[in-house]
Length: 147
Image: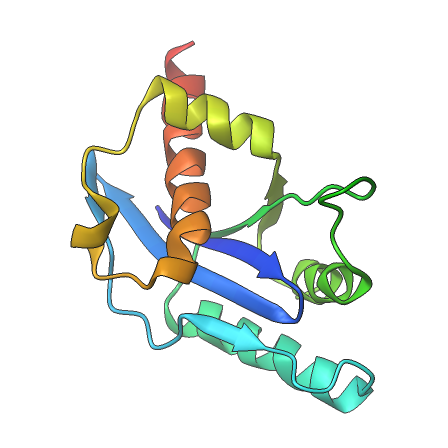
């Protein structure tokens, strides 16, 4: 299964492609690490962002997009632009998108910690949350099948 982990931070969408085949994880080459909505008030720019994201997922034959959930209220609440980007991704037809809560991510990582030092992945620092989201999702499915 090929999963794209997504972390939305303001007008940036950090992505990480992770695949799991026969119990082996792989970080395939991926032409994009971050997508940015340059003009948050432009419908044209939002559509361009949505089309770019959809094309990226299509080109790499991504099975599922997993977005890290952000709180709607409180000190760490997501901003309006982030929710706009999340909706743009969720509304892409023929794309399987799920939102994974931070609690589920933490629980999955606790049950099956990552066995490699993040620095050895060759990913950028800002991709770590997207990587953890994808990894936690793949491991959550693994545990759900056992339980």
